[in-house]
Amino acid sequence: MNLILWTCHDTGVAIGPYGDRNVATPQLDRLAASGTVFERNFCTTPLCSPSRGAIQTGRYPHVNGLIGLVNQGWDQPAEGRCLTHLLAAAGYHTSLVGFQHIRADTATLGFDEHFAGQHYRATAGAEKVAELLAAPPREPFYIEVNCFESHRVWDADDGSVDPAALTPPPYWPDSPEVREDMAGLYRHVLLIDRAVGTVLDALERTGCASDTLFVFTVDHGIPFPRCKSTLYDSGIQTALLIRGDGVVPAGARCPAMISNVDLLPTLLDLLGLPKPGGLDGRSFARQATGAAREPHRQWIFSEKSWHDDYDPMRCVRTERWKYIRNLRPGPLLTLPLDLQPFNCPTARAMHNAYLADRPAEELYDVHEDPHELHNQAADPTLKSTVEELRGVLDDWMEQTGDPFLAHGYVPAPAKNWQVSERGRQWYPGGDA
Image (cartoon, rainbow, N blue to C red; front, side, top):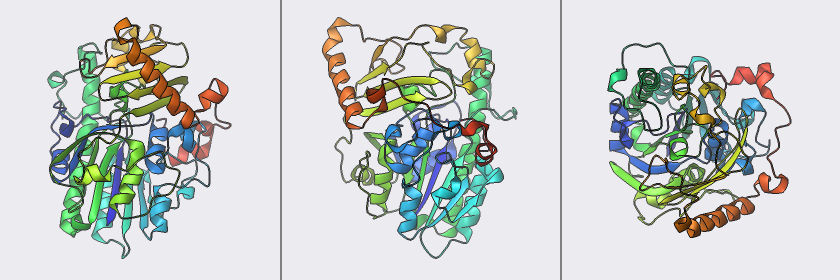
Protein backbone atom coordinates (compact mmCIF):
# COMPACT_ATOMS: atom_id res chain seq x y z
CA MET A 1 0.00 0.00 0.00
CA ASN A 2 1.35 3.42 -1.03
CA LEU A 3 0.94 6.61 0.99
CA ILE A 4 0.40 10.26 0.08
CA LEU A 5 0.42 12.63 3.07
CA TRP A 6 -0.74 16.16 2.28
CA THR A 7 -0.35 18.76 5.05
CA CYS A 8 -1.64 22.32 4.73
CA HIS A 9 -0.59 25.38 6.65
CA ASP A 10 -2.99 27.27 8.89
CA THR A 11 -6.32 25.94 7.58
CA GLY A 12 -7.87 24.45 10.72
CA VAL A 13 -11.27 23.05 9.75
CA ALA A 14 -12.23 25.85 7.33
CA ILE A 15 -13.47 23.39 4.70
CA GLY A 16 -16.82 21.93 3.70
CA PRO A 17 -16.46 18.45 5.24
CA TYR A 18 -16.32 20.13 8.67
CA GLY A 19 -19.45 22.18 8.13
CA ASP A 20 -17.78 25.41 6.98
CA ARG A 21 -20.08 26.88 4.36
CA ASN A 22 -18.25 30.14 3.68
CA VAL A 23 -17.08 28.74 0.33
CA ALA A 24 -17.85 25.51 -1.51
CA THR A 25 -15.07 22.90 -1.45
CA PRO A 26 -16.35 20.24 -3.88
CA GLN A 27 -13.08 18.37 -4.22
CA LEU A 28 -12.58 18.05 -0.47
CA ASP A 29 -16.23 16.96 -0.25
CA ARG A 30 -15.39 14.39 -2.93
CA LEU A 31 -12.44 13.18 -0.83
CA ALA A 32 -14.72 12.94 2.20
CA ALA A 33 -17.29 10.95 0.22
CA SER A 34 -14.64 8.43 -0.86
CA GLY A 35 -12.96 8.20 2.55
CA THR A 36 -13.40 8.92 6.25
CA VAL A 37 -13.66 12.30 7.97
CA PHE A 38 -12.22 12.38 11.48
CA GLU A 39 -14.53 14.90 13.05
CA ARG A 40 -12.52 15.65 16.19
CA ASN A 41 -8.86 15.67 15.32
CA PHE A 42 -6.69 17.97 17.44
CA CYS A 43 -3.08 19.06 17.07
CA THR A 44 -0.59 18.87 19.90
CA THR A 45 0.28 22.54 19.50
CA PRO A 46 -1.12 25.46 17.45
CA LEU A 47 2.27 26.10 15.82
CA CYS A 48 3.72 24.84 12.55
CA SER A 49 7.02 23.05 13.25
CA PRO A 50 5.98 21.53 16.60
CA SER A 51 2.67 20.25 15.23
CA ARG A 52 4.26 18.78 12.12
CA GLY A 53 6.97 17.24 14.28
CA ALA A 54 4.32 15.47 16.37
CA ILE A 55 2.73 14.09 13.19
CA GLN A 56 6.05 12.88 11.88
CA THR A 57 7.44 11.38 15.10
CA GLY A 58 4.41 10.28 17.14
CA ARG A 59 5.87 12.22 20.09
CA TYR A 60 4.78 15.40 21.82
CA PRO A 61 6.71 18.59 20.94
CA HIS A 62 8.58 18.81 24.23
CA VAL A 63 9.55 15.15 23.82
CA ASN A 64 10.75 15.18 20.19
CA GLY A 65 12.73 18.43 20.49
CA LEU A 66 10.53 20.72 18.37
CA ILE A 67 9.27 23.02 21.11
CA GLY A 68 9.27 25.97 18.71
CA LEU A 69 9.84 26.80 15.05
CA VAL A 70 12.78 25.33 13.18
CA ASN A 71 13.52 28.72 11.63
CA GLN A 72 13.92 30.11 15.14
CA GLY A 73 16.49 27.57 16.28
CA TRP A 74 14.56 24.49 17.37
CA ASP A 75 15.39 21.12 15.85
CA GLN A 76 14.98 17.41 16.37
CA PRO A 77 17.93 15.30 17.51
CA ALA A 78 19.91 13.97 14.56
CA GLU A 79 19.20 10.41 15.67
CA GLY A 80 15.46 10.99 15.88
CA ARG A 81 13.43 8.92 13.44
CA CYS A 82 10.52 10.33 11.48
CA LEU A 83 7.86 8.75 9.29
CA THR A 84 10.14 9.07 6.26
CA HIS A 85 12.90 7.05 7.94
CA LEU A 86 10.48 4.34 9.01
CA LEU A 87 8.98 4.00 5.54
CA ALA A 88 12.38 4.05 3.83
CA ALA A 89 13.53 1.25 6.14
CA ALA A 90 10.45 -0.73 5.04
CA GLY A 91 11.45 -0.39 1.37
CA TYR A 92 9.44 2.66 0.33
CA HIS A 93 10.59 5.13 -2.30
CA THR A 94 10.20 8.54 -0.63
CA SER A 95 9.48 11.88 -2.30
CA LEU A 96 9.11 15.33 -0.74
CA VAL A 97 7.02 17.84 -2.68
CA GLY A 98 7.27 21.41 -1.44
CA PHE A 99 8.92 22.38 1.82
CA GLN A 100 9.54 20.65 5.11
CA HIS A 101 9.48 22.45 8.45
CA ILE A 102 10.74 19.96 11.02
CA ARG A 103 14.51 19.82 10.43
CA ALA A 104 17.14 22.50 9.96
CA ASP A 105 18.76 20.30 7.32
CA THR A 106 16.33 18.65 4.89
CA ALA A 107 18.97 16.08 3.95
CA THR A 108 18.72 14.49 7.41
CA LEU A 109 15.17 13.38 6.58
CA GLY A 110 16.56 11.03 3.95
CA PHE A 111 14.07 11.55 1.12
CA ASP A 112 15.03 9.87 -2.14
CA GLU A 113 14.00 13.00 -4.02
CA HIS A 114 12.89 16.54 -3.19
CA PHE A 115 10.89 18.82 -5.46
CA ALA A 116 11.22 22.32 -4.03
CA GLY A 117 10.90 25.73 -5.67
CA GLN A 118 7.39 26.57 -6.80
CA HIS A 119 6.13 23.19 -5.59
CA TYR A 120 5.48 24.60 -2.13
CA ARG A 121 2.29 26.16 -3.53
CA ALA A 122 -0.76 23.89 -3.68
CA THR A 123 -1.38 24.05 -7.44
CA ALA A 124 2.19 23.25 -8.48
CA GLY A 125 2.54 20.65 -5.72
CA ALA A 126 -0.54 18.80 -6.92
CA GLU A 127 0.69 18.87 -10.51
CA LYS A 128 3.99 17.34 -9.38
CA VAL A 129 2.12 14.59 -7.51
CA ALA A 130 0.12 13.84 -10.66
CA GLU A 131 3.37 13.62 -12.61
CA LEU A 132 4.85 11.20 -10.06
CA LEU A 133 1.72 9.03 -10.12
CA ALA A 134 1.94 8.77 -13.92
CA ALA A 135 5.28 6.95 -13.61
CA PRO A 136 5.41 5.43 -10.12
CA PRO A 137 8.48 3.52 -8.89
CA ARG A 138 8.43 -0.27 -8.72
CA GLU A 139 8.60 -0.27 -4.94
CA PRO A 140 5.79 1.15 -2.77
CA PHE A 141 5.98 4.92 -2.59
CA TYR A 142 5.54 7.64 -0.01
CA ILE A 143 4.83 11.15 -1.28
CA GLU A 144 4.83 13.89 1.33
CA VAL A 145 3.31 17.20 0.24
CA ASN A 146 3.57 20.37 2.31
CA CYS A 147 1.84 23.39 0.79
CA PHE A 148 2.06 27.04 1.80
CA GLU A 149 -1.69 27.66 1.80
CA SER A 150 -3.42 28.94 3.97
CA HIS A 151 -0.54 30.89 5.47
CA ARG A 152 -0.59 34.65 5.19
CA VAL A 153 0.19 36.68 2.96
CA TRP A 154 -2.97 36.45 0.85
CA ASP A 155 -2.89 36.20 -2.92
CA ALA A 156 -4.31 39.07 -4.96
CA ASP A 157 -8.09 39.34 -4.98
CA ASP A 158 -9.33 37.48 -8.07
CA GLY A 159 -13.02 37.90 -7.27
CA SER A 160 -13.48 34.23 -6.41
CA VAL A 161 -14.71 35.00 -2.87
CA ASP A 162 -17.42 37.50 -2.01
CA PRO A 163 -16.66 39.06 1.41
CA ALA A 164 -20.33 39.87 1.91
CA ALA A 165 -21.16 36.16 1.82
CA LEU A 166 -18.80 35.30 4.69
CA THR A 167 -19.77 34.88 8.35
CA PRO A 168 -17.19 35.90 10.98
CA PRO A 169 -17.14 33.95 14.27
CA PRO A 170 -18.45 35.78 17.35
CA TYR A 171 -15.02 36.61 18.76
CA TRP A 172 -14.22 39.02 15.87
CA PRO A 173 -16.03 42.22 14.91
CA ASP A 174 -18.35 41.75 11.95
CA SER A 175 -16.94 44.53 9.78
CA PRO A 176 -16.01 44.98 6.11
CA GLU A 177 -12.33 44.95 7.11
CA VAL A 178 -12.67 41.55 8.80
CA ARG A 179 -14.69 40.09 5.93
CA GLU A 180 -12.09 41.24 3.40
CA ASP A 181 -9.43 39.57 5.53
CA MET A 182 -11.45 36.37 5.67
CA ALA A 183 -11.81 36.45 1.88
CA GLY A 184 -8.02 36.15 1.61
CA LEU A 185 -8.11 32.97 3.67
CA TYR A 186 -10.89 31.45 1.61
CA ARG A 187 -9.13 32.23 -1.67
CA HIS A 188 -6.37 29.97 -0.35
CA VAL A 189 -8.92 27.35 0.67
CA LEU A 190 -10.20 27.29 -2.91
CA LEU A 191 -6.66 26.74 -4.19
CA ILE A 192 -6.26 23.82 -1.80
CA ASP A 193 -9.58 22.38 -2.90
CA ARG A 194 -8.66 22.46 -6.58
CA ALA A 195 -5.25 20.93 -5.81
CA VAL A 196 -6.88 18.03 -3.96
CA GLY A 197 -9.06 17.47 -7.02
CA THR A 198 -5.94 17.26 -9.19
CA VAL A 199 -4.55 14.51 -6.95
CA LEU A 200 -7.83 12.59 -6.83
CA ASP A 201 -8.09 12.74 -10.63
CA ALA A 202 -4.52 11.49 -10.97
CA LEU A 203 -5.09 8.63 -8.55
CA GLU A 204 -8.08 7.46 -10.58
CA ARG A 205 -6.51 8.07 -14.00
CA THR A 206 -3.32 6.15 -13.20
CA GLY A 207 -4.99 3.26 -11.39
CA CYS A 208 -3.14 4.09 -8.17
CA ALA A 209 -6.32 4.77 -6.20
CA SER A 210 -6.86 1.12 -5.33
CA ASP A 211 -3.56 0.73 -3.50
CA THR A 212 -2.80 4.22 -2.15
CA LEU A 213 -3.74 5.81 1.14
CA PHE A 214 -4.40 9.52 0.62
CA VAL A 215 -4.21 11.46 3.89
CA PHE A 216 -5.16 15.14 4.01
CA THR A 217 -4.48 17.10 7.17
CA VAL A 218 -3.56 20.53 8.57
CA ASP A 219 -0.96 21.66 11.08
CA HIS A 220 -3.18 24.00 13.19
CA GLY A 221 -5.89 26.63 13.20
CA ILE A 222 -6.41 29.49 10.77
CA PRO A 223 -4.04 32.51 10.80
CA PHE A 224 -6.27 34.88 12.71
CA PRO A 225 -6.37 36.20 16.30
CA ARG A 226 -7.82 33.73 18.80
CA CYS A 227 -7.12 30.85 16.43
CA LYS A 228 -3.52 30.15 15.39
CA SER A 229 -1.13 30.25 18.36
CA THR A 230 -3.91 29.66 20.94
CA LEU A 231 -5.17 26.55 22.73
CA TYR A 232 -8.83 27.21 22.01
CA ASP A 233 -10.44 24.68 19.69
CA SER A 234 -10.16 27.30 16.94
CA GLY A 235 -6.40 26.93 17.29
CA ILE A 236 -6.02 23.18 17.82
CA GLN A 237 -8.86 21.46 15.94
CA THR A 238 -7.62 20.40 12.51
CA ALA A 239 -8.91 18.59 9.46
CA LEU A 240 -8.03 14.94 8.90
CA LEU A 241 -9.46 12.98 5.96
CA ILE A 242 -8.19 9.53 4.95
CA ARG A 243 -9.06 7.73 1.73
CA GLY A 244 -8.00 4.14 1.09
CA ASP A 245 -9.98 1.59 -0.91
CA GLY A 246 -10.58 -1.48 1.20
CA VAL A 247 -8.76 0.07 4.16
CA VAL A 248 -11.02 2.83 5.50
CA PRO A 249 -14.75 3.01 4.76
CA ALA A 250 -16.04 5.48 2.18
CA GLY A 251 -18.39 8.23 3.27
CA ALA A 252 -17.79 7.56 6.97
CA ARG A 253 -17.43 10.05 9.79
CA CYS A 254 -15.42 9.05 12.85
CA PRO A 255 -16.47 10.94 16.01
CA ALA A 256 -13.63 9.72 18.24
CA MET A 257 -11.37 12.35 19.84
CA ILE A 258 -7.89 11.88 18.41
CA SER A 259 -4.60 13.77 18.53
CA ASN A 260 -2.24 14.30 15.63
CA VAL A 261 0.44 12.60 17.74
CA ASP A 262 -1.61 9.45 17.02
CA LEU A 263 -1.31 9.69 13.24
CA LEU A 264 2.11 8.05 12.82
CA PRO A 265 1.27 4.80 14.67
CA THR A 266 -2.10 4.71 12.91
CA LEU A 267 -0.57 5.01 9.45
CA LEU A 268 1.97 2.30 10.24
CA ASP A 269 -0.86 0.02 11.36
CA LEU A 270 -2.91 0.74 8.25
CA LEU A 271 0.14 0.00 6.08
CA GLY A 272 0.86 -3.21 7.99
CA LEU A 273 4.24 -1.99 9.22
CA PRO A 274 5.79 -2.36 12.70
CA LYS A 275 5.68 0.56 15.12
CA PRO A 276 8.79 1.76 16.97
CA GLY A 277 8.84 1.89 20.74
CA GLY A 278 8.66 5.02 22.85
CA LEU A 279 5.76 6.69 21.06
CA ASP A 280 3.39 9.07 22.82
CA GLY A 281 0.77 8.49 20.14
CA ARG A 282 -1.66 5.60 20.13
CA SER A 283 -3.03 4.05 16.98
CA PHE A 284 -6.67 4.71 16.11
CA ALA A 285 -6.56 2.20 13.24
CA ARG A 286 -9.49 0.23 14.65
CA GLN A 287 -11.63 3.36 14.71
CA ALA A 288 -10.39 4.33 11.24
CA THR A 289 -11.28 0.99 9.68
CA GLY A 290 -14.65 0.84 11.41
CA ALA A 291 -13.61 -2.21 13.43
CA ALA A 292 -14.21 -0.35 16.70
CA ARG A 293 -16.68 2.32 17.72
CA GLU A 294 -15.47 2.86 21.27
CA PRO A 295 -13.80 6.17 22.23
CA HIS A 296 -10.12 6.51 21.39
CA ARG A 297 -8.95 9.11 23.92
CA GLN A 298 -10.40 10.35 27.17
CA TRP A 299 -8.10 13.39 27.15
CA ILE A 300 -6.48 15.52 24.47
CA PHE A 301 -3.36 17.44 25.50
CA SER A 302 -1.92 20.45 23.74
CA GLU A 303 0.90 22.84 24.52
CA LYS A 304 2.54 26.08 23.54
CA SER A 305 5.90 27.40 24.71
CA TRP A 306 7.63 29.46 22.04
CA HIS A 307 6.28 31.08 18.89
CA ASP A 308 7.61 34.51 17.98
CA ASP A 309 7.64 35.17 21.73
CA TYR A 310 7.82 33.06 24.86
CA ASP A 311 4.19 32.29 25.68
CA PRO A 312 3.94 29.09 27.77
CA MET A 313 0.56 27.43 28.25
CA ARG A 314 -0.84 23.89 28.44
CA CYS A 315 -4.32 22.42 28.12
CA VAL A 316 -6.35 19.28 28.51
CA ARG A 317 -9.63 18.71 26.68
CA THR A 318 -12.27 16.11 27.43
CA GLU A 319 -15.55 15.36 25.67
CA ARG A 320 -17.13 18.28 27.53
CA TRP A 321 -14.46 20.45 29.15
CA LYS A 322 -11.41 22.45 28.10
CA TYR A 323 -8.95 23.44 30.85
CA ILE A 324 -6.15 25.85 29.93
CA ARG A 325 -3.28 26.74 32.25
CA ASN A 326 -1.42 29.94 31.40
CA LEU A 327 2.04 29.47 32.84
CA ARG A 328 3.05 33.13 32.73
CA PRO A 329 1.13 36.41 33.10
CA GLY A 330 0.63 38.37 29.93
CA PRO A 331 -1.94 39.69 27.48
CA LEU A 332 -5.02 37.67 26.70
CA LEU A 333 -3.58 36.90 23.25
CA THR A 334 0.11 36.99 22.36
CA LEU A 335 -0.06 37.54 18.62
CA PRO A 336 2.68 36.12 16.38
CA LEU A 337 4.21 38.45 13.82
CA ASP A 338 1.87 37.50 10.99
CA LEU A 339 -1.14 38.32 13.18
CA GLN A 340 0.10 41.64 14.53
CA PRO A 341 -2.11 44.63 13.60
CA PHE A 342 0.38 45.85 10.98
CA ASN A 343 -0.06 42.52 9.13
CA CYS A 344 -3.59 41.47 10.05
CA PRO A 345 -6.70 43.62 9.41
CA THR A 346 -8.73 41.49 11.82
CA ALA A 347 -6.32 42.31 14.65
CA ARG A 348 -6.67 46.00 13.81
CA ALA A 349 -10.45 45.68 13.92
CA MET A 350 -10.22 44.17 17.40
CA HIS A 351 -8.45 47.34 18.59
CA ASN A 352 -6.82 46.52 21.94
CA ALA A 353 -9.21 43.83 23.17
CA TYR A 354 -6.53 41.14 22.93
CA LEU A 355 -4.27 43.11 25.30
CA ALA A 356 -6.46 42.51 28.36
CA ASP A 357 -4.79 40.53 31.16
CA ARG A 358 -5.04 36.79 30.80
CA PRO A 359 -6.27 34.63 33.67
CA ALA A 360 -4.05 31.97 35.22
CA GLU A 361 -6.65 29.30 34.45
CA GLU A 362 -9.45 28.95 31.94
CA LEU A 363 -12.31 26.44 31.90
CA TYR A 364 -14.86 26.11 29.12
CA ASP A 365 -17.87 23.89 28.59
CA VAL A 366 -17.26 23.05 24.94
CA HIS A 367 -20.76 21.56 24.56
CA GLU A 368 -22.63 24.65 25.71
CA ASP A 369 -19.97 27.20 24.76
CA PRO A 370 -18.21 25.85 21.63
CA HIS A 371 -16.49 29.17 20.88
CA GLU A 372 -15.02 29.19 24.42
CA LEU A 373 -16.25 32.68 25.24
CA HIS A 374 -17.18 32.21 28.92
CA ASN A 375 -14.38 31.28 31.30
CA GLN A 376 -15.86 29.32 34.22
CA ALA A 377 -12.64 28.51 36.09
CA ALA A 378 -13.69 30.66 39.06
CA ASP A 379 -17.20 29.21 39.28
CA PRO A 380 -17.45 27.59 42.76
CA THR A 381 -19.91 25.00 41.48
CA LEU A 382 -17.22 23.73 39.09
CA LYS A 383 -14.42 23.54 41.67
CA SER A 384 -14.22 19.74 41.50
CA THR A 385 -14.02 19.81 37.69
CA VAL A 386 -11.14 22.30 37.79
CA GLU A 387 -9.31 20.28 40.44
CA GLU A 388 -9.71 17.05 38.48
CA LEU A 389 -8.40 18.58 35.26
CA ARG A 390 -5.53 20.27 37.09
CA GLY A 391 -4.47 16.85 38.31
CA VAL A 392 -4.80 15.25 34.86
CA LEU A 393 -2.66 18.00 33.32
CA ASP A 394 -0.08 17.78 36.13
CA ASP A 395 0.23 14.02 35.60
CA TRP A 396 0.69 14.42 31.85
CA MET A 397 3.37 17.09 32.27
CA GLU A 398 5.22 14.89 34.75
CA GLN A 399 4.89 11.65 32.78
CA THR A 400 6.12 13.26 29.55
CA GLY A 401 8.99 15.21 31.14
CA ASP A 402 7.67 18.70 30.43
CA PRO A 403 10.72 21.00 30.76
CA PHE A 404 8.61 23.63 32.49
CA LEU A 405 8.46 21.39 35.56
CA ALA A 406 12.25 21.04 35.66
CA HIS A 407 13.14 24.70 35.13
CA GLY A 408 10.05 26.76 35.91
CA TYR A 409 10.32 27.97 32.32
CA VAL A 410 11.14 26.51 28.89
CA PRO A 411 14.69 27.46 27.81
CA ALA A 412 15.22 29.21 24.48
CA PRO A 413 17.04 27.37 21.68
CA ALA A 414 20.81 27.59 21.57
CA LYS A 415 20.96 28.90 18.00
CA ASN A 416 18.75 30.95 15.72
CA TRP A 417 18.34 29.81 12.12
CA GLN A 418 16.09 32.76 11.40
CA VAL A 419 19.08 34.95 10.57
CA SER A 420 21.00 32.38 8.53
CA GLU A 421 21.02 31.98 4.76
CA ARG A 422 20.49 28.26 5.24
CA GLY A 423 17.35 28.87 7.23
CA ARG A 424 15.87 31.13 4.58
CA GLN A 425 16.64 28.73 1.75
CA TRP A 426 14.85 25.61 2.87
CA TYR A 427 11.56 27.26 3.85
CA PRO A 428 10.35 29.45 0.99
CA GLY A 429 7.18 30.50 2.77
CA GLY A 430 9.03 32.56 5.39
CA ASP A 431 8.15 32.71 9.07
CA ALA A 432 5.44 30.20 10.08
